[in-house]
Amino acid sequence: MWNQSIRALSICYPIWMVLFIYPLPGFSQTRIHLSVQPPTLRIGITGDWQGKDRAEIACAQNETESFQAVVTARGGSLRGVDAEVTSLRGGRDEIPAERIVLYREEYVRVKYSSPRATEAPGLFPDPLIPFRDPYSGEAVPVPQWNEENAPRNRFGAAGFDLWEDHHQPLWIDVHVPPNTPAGTYAGEIRVWARNAEAVDLPIQLTVWDFTLPAGPTHENHFGGFGYLARYHGIERDSPEFHRLEDRYAAMMAAHRLNPPLPARWLPEPAEDGSIQMTEELDKQITEYVNRLHVTNLEIPRAPFRDALGADRPKAIRFYRSWYAYLQSKGWESGAYHYMLDEPNDAGQYEEVRQLGALLHEAEPRIRRLVVEQPYGQDPAWGVLDGAIDIWCPLFGFIDEDSVKRVQAQGDAVWSYTALVQAAPSYHPRFEEVKNGNPPYWQIDFPLTAYRIAPWLNRRYGITGLLYWSTVFWQAPRRNPWDDPGFRLRFNGDGALFYPGNDAGIDGPIASLRLKALRDGMEDYEYFALLEKLGGKTVVDEIVRQAVPTWAAWEPDGNRLMDLRRRLAEEILKRRKAN
Image 1 (cartoon, helix red, strand yellow):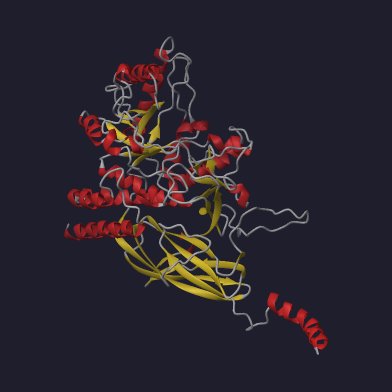
Image 2 (tube, one colour; image 1 turned 120 degrees about the horizontal axis):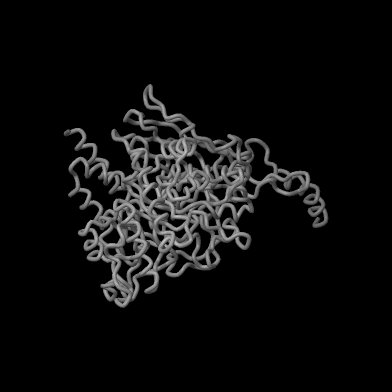
């Protein structure tokens, strides 16, 4: 009896295995579960995520709004998952599908926690791989193996597999063109798999009747792209580098950050030090500034060996002629010169004073930026008042009274962040703030740490934001896809992009952190618009709800979204009244 049962099982076993691996039509119980999450959360690979069954988003004209559609495999593992988003229609009006970009969120591994991290090491969604290559228009599939059994690309989007009860978040950017009529628009996102029926999820977009400006109102500097050449092993004067530089600049601008002027278009100084702007260089620069809506331009450093000594007359003519050119184009109000980065001893303080005097002699209207807080580190080094027009303290170093003091004398204040730096011992109120935590810009902190920075700046009357790099990848030792740590522990520091070559894309890959920062920069536009409509008191009241101080800020993304809606409602009400 027992032997007969074994024989029967051995005969049936292959059939059951075939049915398990390749179920017949209608036989599989594998299904797609699709839910919506806001853009302020990171979605883990596993866990209980209670999302919504429809996407309901709202934004202004000329704004990009996002949401996450979380794909979950139920009743089995999904094979070959793909997705698409339809156009959004509102009556006879339409936001075409070309204005909607669909990404698969890739995960990177954080091995060592950043100092003061709020989230444990593990896998974090961060790189956003588009389903279609933005430059070729071709699909970006998950790894495909060629005849040599080597994948053509390490990461992709279309055709992914998903284990049972695991999640794969998709990121959706909806860009509303500036001339889009206000109203409600509807469409859907569809997700399907080779072994599961397609699932549709409705999208409803409300377009508010006001328009964000083309370029950023909040001043900013986010570094250059020189590190691209080192990472990719190419020359900075090569066509390959120029192509990458242009594509990274365009993506930076698309997220309301000012890209730098490419070095290849900077004119060489004449014998007397003045720049000689040719018609061709002017044409290139003008097209670049207008196309990317650049609102801040950095005046380059005078390329002379002894600018403070024997070459001083040349340096003066260099800066004077640069300002004259910018003034002739109407760009001078957003121009500045980045004099020095983090002066940390008496000699560097003296260098700031001398450089400041040189620039003032060349052209008093050139704004002089130094990455330093408006209070000294050591009284013996002297003061920098009169030598700086734009002070740029670290987030954790900001002191409200010091900010107000330099603002009262006509100076501007920007802010910046790097590594994980809290208040220093020489902070004027160190005992009060020493245990506070400003937002830190590492992967293992909440996404809201990026979005909240422009809110904090608005709270203190700080008018600009600086970051040291968006592409500091430590090649050849470390690929950010495999290890995002900077100095091992500062995860993602100095890198808001990923190199696209690992996904088969000849250009940048955006990060979730970059998207969160873009949303904060767009929020700042709401502050500016409402203030222009006479709503400064309302702006101040709403902002203070989110950010009472630098060390006490709202980490709840849903709360920030509610406050943003209040800002929009106030703008609409005042526009209607006017």
